[in-house]
Image 1: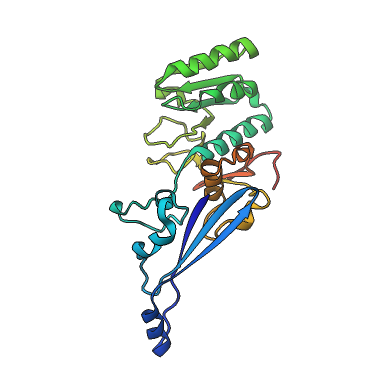
Image 2: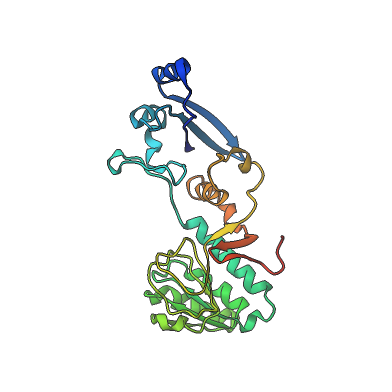
Length: 269
């Protein structure tokens, strides 16, 4: 079961009605929603004071306090034990699925200079899928072993090879950089490069960077999503907390960032 917390702060009423609401105190409503085998407990906290009294919310949230689905505008005291659910696992799947779709759909993709940026080698299984679609692939990683194993398999099965190294300078001539991890360091990329990643980079880049993905939430799940949560965030919770791993096969319609939107050439509008 997943638990979502929504906070509503009504416009203060004037006169006796406003005083009556303050005297009555905050209100908590709990709705239980189900879709496709998933149960969501939606806690709606109505605050007449503008603050959330966690001791009051704790009565219904309980053990779910450390993985709450809620708006990123909602902040909790560090010592409260309350934590907003956050994971890059689903975003990484959207990132790599979109990248593979882009390589498959682009005319002349075999000549597109592509790189995988994955310092911890968390996504080495991606390499053969990229090599199927692209003949010029570099990998920038600090952990060679997983990628060397993946490269050996790709060479035997596909007859394709990749350049694997640690030097960030390998990215300087890449047209497409697939980064299914948070980018926390400056990278020597060209102005014409496209970076696909999972969150806003922590350093500025001169090229186009995309980290949000637009897609259609599968039927049923859209009906139980709290209004203030984005589709990507809610599906991330379904994927990670509710083991809805079939969502990992979604190919986004578009990637978005400060540079605008990038659509798959042959994708849906």
